[in-house]
Length: 321
Picture 1 (cartoon, rainbow, N blue to C red):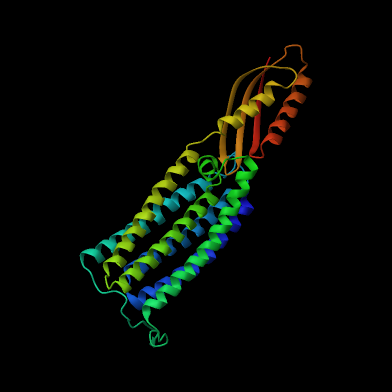
Picture 2 (spheres, rainbow, N blue to C red):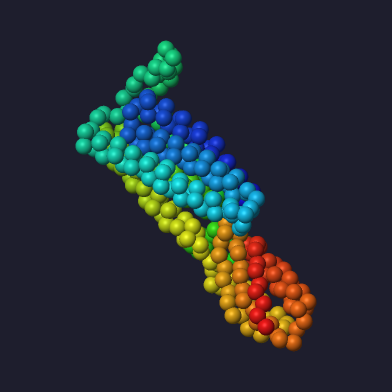
């Protein structure tokens, strides 16, 4: 699962890094509020991918005495950090800038001189600044469609693998927060680019800059909503969520049906990382079984549980006679 998640993140990183540069250049040329919001958006998206890659790498560290179950939960932490630091800040800045543009309107879309290292880049682009922004946003939409398709393919693979009914169930049950974050981020980035394109188009053809400013506010609100939603999804895993009830029922059944098992006294599961579950069970065995037989039964039960669900990585069976 980590390999699929990493490819999704790398695809989004390349796309968002390129888009951020193009959007910022478009903003410099035109002063468009929605283009600045989209610049904030793409910068936060790029930083997002960096944090997620750090989380993936950190989570792959070998378990040790201080962290006997490994570092898998690092991905939950870094995804939560993304929601708070990146999307919260980017959303607030976009919202604030859009509000200022509404309260203190300025005519956007005018050509502005962009001078870097003594070179006037505006003179090198002898076209209407509005069409520059249109091309940049259309390019952003194409980039985001590609990244979104990558993330959607990985989610579809998990949906098929675990028998989930669709995206709604996947969002509530997946432990792969990296892919979940990339998928949601790409969907919102796609929506933000469309909103910006509509905003600058209405501002241009209706000669009403207010639409550009309103688009900036909408993009900011969209980012802040995502920050809250992502933080909420990560909270359940950081706190220690168990496997879904139907999966636990299947695992319990596999234990209770094993020869020599009399009763299951206790059963718990918890995610210790993306796609990594710890299972513990207190099991009463037939009192006539030999100690060696019980040990062999425990080994078979552990293998059986891992075979039923590939997320089961660590199993502890406590025998009760």
